Image (cartoon, rainbow, N blue to C red; front, side, top):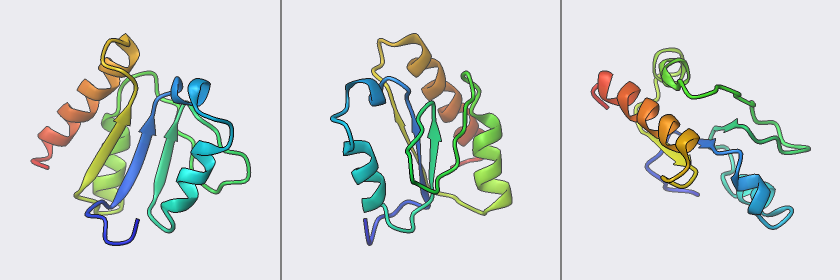
Length: 102
């Protein structure tokens, strides 16, 4: 992912792991190279990525990325919009980003 305009990636959907081809998420994570990756509801064996298990409030996650690490360009990868949990997480992420003017 060289040349990407992102500071990091937060993968926030436990349902992705249920439908992905075994090993495909791990392969995708390796393609990120040194780009920071936070996992929410997923665990990759053998990968050195922090696991973040937050029911729906992404305010502390966004706050940490922005305030502790200075990241300004954040992306959100979530589940399908018809999934209430995925929708709640997306809304929380968007609100936290907007509060910071990002």
